[in-house]
Image (spheres, rainbow, N blue to C red):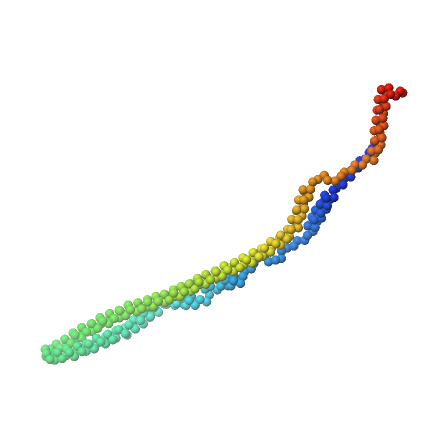
Length: 283
């Protein structure tokens, strides 16, 4: 006759509660929908930064110093050789008008006075005839005209040198003015750049504070999102640390009673055989 043994295992209530809680938490965690961060993540430029950036874009624009310096430089560079010669000639004429004509007029007056004196001397002396007198006066006039020519040539040459020097001075002054204007514009721009740099630094410092606040908000959101997972991981650790082997196991054998009777009978048979051998029982 065959026999069947049935074993029934009963889990400890503590283990069962932990497993149910763990699987339930896992299902709830997996069912949690994704929640994206909707807050602002990057701090935008501050008013100071925006103003500084606009200032950088306007540097050099509308600077009167640069405009005037450029006009001056263009005026100098665009002068043609003909214009230069005409300008120098005009300056030379100014010089001759102021120096040559008065000088020649003075020399002519002096010569006229000399003629009167010479004529008086000749008349008083009676030393010359008409022919010799004409020769003498012609020589004196020739010497005067030659001297006048040398004086005029010298003055005109000096007029050219003075005109060229005057032109060079004026061009140099114009160049110096243009350089001074450009230098003033550059100094002004550098000052503005320094001011804009300080403004930009202040704006970035303000933006950094705003960025720190936004980062803190995002980190807090992330911490909040990770909290359920941390809780679940803690629960898993608790489950892993729970000792195993709790609970009871019951074994049921439906033929256990017959086996017991058989054992008794078998024991009795053995006992009878022993008694016969000992002479307790007689067949």
